Image (tube, rainbow, N blue to C red; front, side):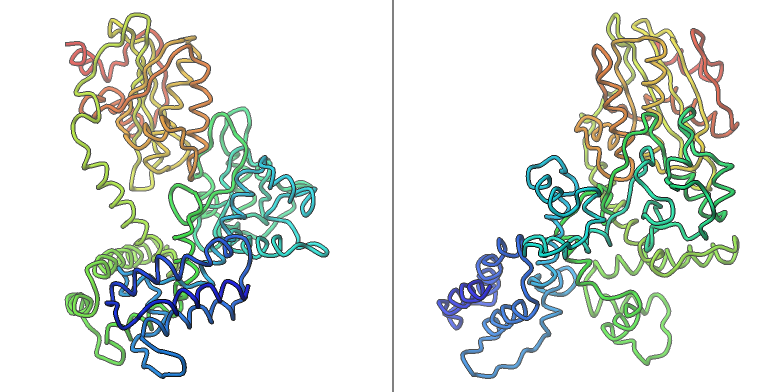
Length: 516
C-alpha cells in the first residue's frame, strides 16, 4: 500500500506548481494523481489513514505548499470534493471512492453468479447461501476482506424486486418500494414455517392474495404491496439497486451517497451555507433570492421542487390525515427532478421516431395496439388492447382494470403483456405490436430487464420468442386512439371485458376512422 502513496508523491514532486494555472493543476490532479490508485482501490481496501495522507499530498500541491512550508487552505477539502454543480471542484474523496469500487466488485459477483470468479468465492466463503448473506469466514484472504467491506455498501443500497417471491423472506428482507427501510414494519405474525413472499402470490391468477395480505399487514402496507406489479410469467426474484431507476449499480452515484451529509444535519447546513442562520423567517421569494446570490441555478431548481414536495406533504396531512417522513419527501423531490429531465430527452425526439398514422399490417400478420391509463388520484390503473388483421378487421379486443395503481411505465408494460397473451390464446404466429410509450418500446427492443419493472420486460421478451415473427414499434398517441379509448373506458366504468371476433361498441367510430 505504501507503494501507491510513493507513486502519487513522485508524480506531484515532478510538477512545477508555480508554472501551472489553477485549471492546469486541476487537470493534472484529476487525470494523473487521482488515477494512480484506481486499480489498487478496485481490488483492495486501502487503510483510511493512507487515504487521508494521499489527499493531504494532493491538497498541499493544490495550495502551493512545499516541504515544511505552511500555506493557508482557504476552502476545506470536504467542500472541494463536492461536484462542481454543488459548488465544489469534483476532487475525489478517496475513502468513499475505495468503498464504491469494492462495492462494484461485490455487485458484479451478485449480478453474474455464473462467472468463474463468483464460483470460486462461492465455493470458499458462501457455499450454501448467497453473497449478501455471506460471512467473513475463518482466515479469509485480504481480497475477500476488501470485497466483504464493499458488500456492506451493496446491502444498504439494494432491495429485492419481486418475481415469484421464492427467495424473499417476508419479515427479514428488503422488498417493499418504500424508501429508507424497504422492509415490512408490520409486527410479525405466525404464518407458515418459512414465511416467503411466494406464499402471498396466487400462482393461478398471477395476483396477490388480498385476504392474506389484509390478515398479515397494516393497511398502508397492504396498499404498498398491491402496488407492486407481478409479471404473468412469475420469473425469479432479483436484487436491484435503489439509487437509480435502471436498478444498476453506478460508482458515481454511490460516491455521492457515501459523501452526502446526513438528513438530520441538512437543514442546519443549508441555513449556515445560505446565511439565514439566526435571521428572521424569510418568505419563499426572499429565500429564492438568497439561493441565487449564494449558489447556482441547480440549487434553486432543488429548492422549488422541494418546496412543492413539502406543500404536497402538508396537504396530505391536512386533508387526508396522512403524511410522509422528511427523507421520503426529499426523495420525492429528487426523483421528480430526475423524471422531468428524462422526459425532456424524449421530447427532443423528432417526428421520425415513430409512425405518422395507424396502418394495416401485411397479409397474414396481425397488429396489436395497446395502451394503459394510470391515474394520479389513487384509483386503479387500466389497460386496453385491440388486435386487427391485414384488412383492418377486429380479431379480438380487451379492456381491463388492473389490481392496483401502478406507474405509467408499469401500466404500459402490463398492457403490452396482455396483448401478447391474448395473441397466444388465439394462436396468432406473426404479430406487430404498437404502443405510444416510447420508453417501454425501447426497453423491450434493447432487452433491458433492469429496474423496478424489468421482470415485466423480461417476461414480454420471453413470450415474444414463442412467435414465428414479431415486431414492436412506437406509435403516436393520436394514432393509438382505439386502445387508448378502451383503457379509458375500463378506467371510468371499472369493467373488465374481452371481445372475440366482434368490434367493441365503444370504439366503432374510431375503428371506422382508422380504416379510412
